[in-house]
Length: 461
Ligand SMILES: *Cc1c(COP(=O)(O)O)cnc(C)c1O
Image (cartoon, rainbow, N blue to C red; front, side):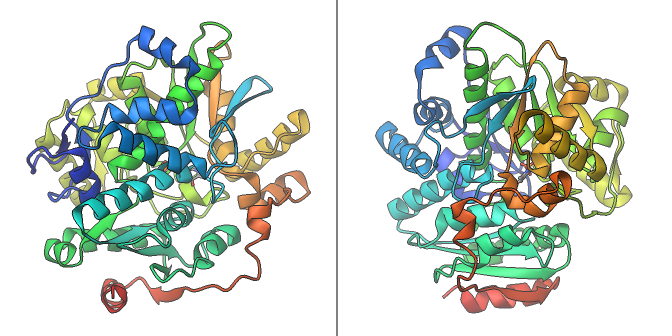
């Protein structure tokens, strides 16, 4: 399997090269040349597999340059850090299925991808005798999961930018209490988009990127999307165990990475009814799907901060397919976005978009009401991100389908919102309890690219 860029400016490269490249050198995103096809018979044969075994079956079809035994060991090591024996269990509650993706070390779904990515990086770097300086932007969850994915690993430094004061207290602690020498937290006085813009600017400086062996860890890295494809298969296999039924997925969406993984699963032949794209008040993607309106607005802070994003970086991957893999169209669309603040779509394109997705935006009042209602009806606590997806699912997904809602974080991770919704704090798991009082390390600075660059240069060692 080889990888190409959405902008069409690179020769096809291998999986390992795609992982190490992160963002394509032409400014695009990397995608496989084709999606492996899974037949219904194959799918049925996967029913008896454990999560790591299934992950190997899915992931290995995209990896042509790592021996099977090595890949298997990497996958097993990555999911051994999860505290649930099923890794991503599916719970049936009140007419919906909750796909619990938060049993990893930072209690959010990003561990699924970043434990894998950390181990892949370590493997490739050791093999090549190279080192890597990871720079990433986070609205909270990516950063902590990335840091935990690579802390203490040989050959890797990590620099994570997060918007100062705009992550949840637990997210901040999960990042800043990691004081390993290879971990550098930078809190930016600004928004997540400011952080992401600076990271993108550093990556687009190709001399700088090469001189300092920059690597990406945010959701533009193909290995992350790939690891997330697995749990769509896993959930589908679980909910269809007692007979054939149509399965639909509701995905609380920020950077479009998680839902793009669902789209990939669909392209691979996983039978899927609707793929529901759920957003909070930062609803550019909902406006896009429902009204063809892809126009930038300001980022607003919400009860689901990991979805407080306007420019979803993985959206470009979907655009590439919407434009029938024509990279000149992708380049033109981003030119349009830059000059006009919007991308325009034809009626025909919008018809195809609506065949792939439906969408709903859920505001803060709706999110909190859903946490409260769901708790009173089922005794089950939703985190605010998951609640956005559940509310959207109850509104839009057909009741005669198995409605799978992706639970992207543990409720205690966003305890403040949960407490407001149900009137009592979420029980705090030991993993969080243990963080209070630990020493922390973090550098606070303005949203100034040159200041960030100078800090980085001073600390790469
Ligand atoms: C990152 C995140 C999301 C959004 O996922 P994307 O892949 O960015 O769309 C949703 N919920 C939580 C808890 C997250 O951490």
